[in-house]
Length: 222
Ligand code: DC
Image 1 (cartoon, rainbow, N blue to C red):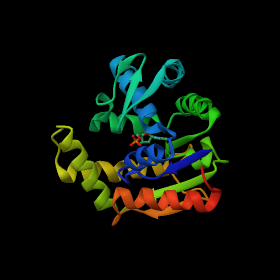
Image 2: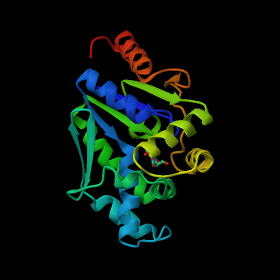
Image 3: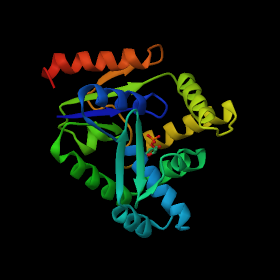
């Protein structure tokens, strides 16, 4: 079974997807981390945002792997751990820009479909229910108000020891929403058959509980 969770940044997708996967005994795939990895490596190799063919080559050649360790999901790119390095505001912005490139999207979608072959997975991103797995067994679209998403992102960065200004973070969330929703290729949008959950006033446990209940209701015991 494939479970798709899409939605804007800061809606709580990663936390919820990880907890849901743990509850189901499934694997969790954070597809945003894959776009971030391409951005991180492009920066390190000084590949410019306009150099589409090098970015495409980079995206298809990267060896990406997720390793679950208890509550934590560690992420490796060509055997180097980049779990924390890809979470800076600079990489967030760069990943959003890079995700507009056709070659990059094609390369990463191919990797994602390969990962999903065996099923038993929770995929989280922007285009999972619309493009990557349109036939997913159940699709969720997780949202929250923009202020709440800005607050969550701000808290997350502070907890990681990254010093940021709240209004700057809020601006970044708004800009990324615009970027991700208005891009030409695979823009973020709710799939027609996705179940929308607004997490503004819900705790992580409440969101996960609701998703679990809906999974049982829709497809029975996973
Ligand atoms: O989920 P995230 O914030 O880590 O994602 C980083 C960027 O990657 C996001 O701004 C848009 C892009 N992305 C995408 O285009 N498609 C996905 N499935 C996941 C992320």
